[in-house]
Length: 144
Ligand code: HEC
Image 1 (tube, protein in one colour):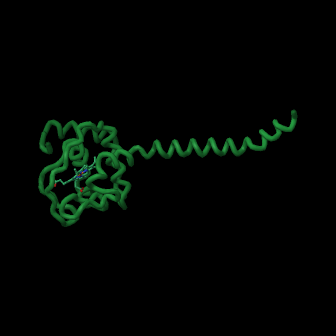
Image 2 (tube, helix red, strand yellow):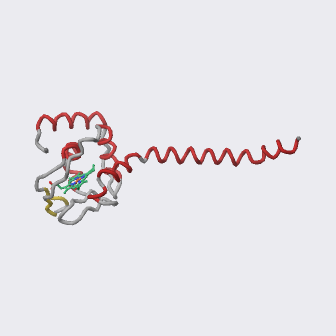
Image 3 (tube, protein in one colour):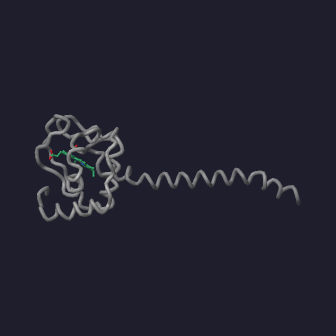
């Protein structure tokens, strides 16, 4: 009877390592929520690498617009956009639809995802600022 329990001790480290790996996978997947939000709500137009479509869909990858108007992004995401803009020297004027179902925190996550991906390294935004910006764009009504 002593032998089986010794065998269990031998395989125990492997079980433990397996559990740790599963836990790490869960954590990584959880932190990737913002990537899933991007895939679901933005990727169909702005594409996988944020490259957009020249002359039709403006890029998010290394877009000067993000750097120039970081305070406008939350309102653009919630209410969409329909006005001529210039991004990296190219003009765009197609309609971006609103995302009324995205919460303030989801919008914060998506903006931070865009700021740190696609070759971008722009400052993060925080939830409180985004909420303030969203309240203001509702009042002004200017991007609907
Ligand atoms: C149906 C296509 C479509 C979807 C989906 C879409 N966009 Fe857009 N987006 C556009 C178009 C078109 C413009 C340019 C609008 C204009 O010229 O008025 C734009 C403009 C922008 C801009 C400002 C210009 C730039 O490139 O920096 C940002 C930022 C942006 N979108 C982010 C997002 C994010 C984040 C999402 C997901 C929540 C998203 N968009 C979903 C089509 C889309």
